[in-house]
Image (cartoon, rainbow, N blue to C red; front, side, top):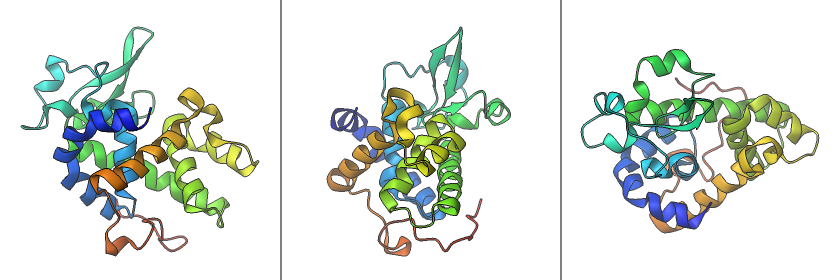
Length: 205
């Protein structure tokens, strides 16, 4: 994972740029991290294993058909839905609405989860660095925030329970490249890191 996948994702990320920037601003997230998750999950819809079924394409937003698909096929079913790969085990009711076919809804849900994860980590690790905060929040996106947060509290790598044992670190590698090469940078409204919300402040939903 990394630079090659980012390059394969570029065309779709460019189409999604305005949505990513808008949702990142809403949740005070680094837009490159938001985009980096999309790269890791589905190459922003370009991954060959990301299947565009007829039932999904019927619900697709015009011009964003590449966002309407499913992946993570295991045990006779698809487990991940949409470009941000919402897990059927955790978000079944939301998936039933087919909101995952709409990039605005899918990226909104991704940002909600990342913001909740970030807040959860900061609550118990108030002095964590921005890099470790985002790494743990992203690891939790993949493997569950409780497990990843607890590992971080114990001084263990939160990625140790993620897919490939590198999910959070890989997203940050993606984010660094996307900062430099595609200009996914934090706006002035977010400050220097995009993670400077005051302690205890609730993200708007």
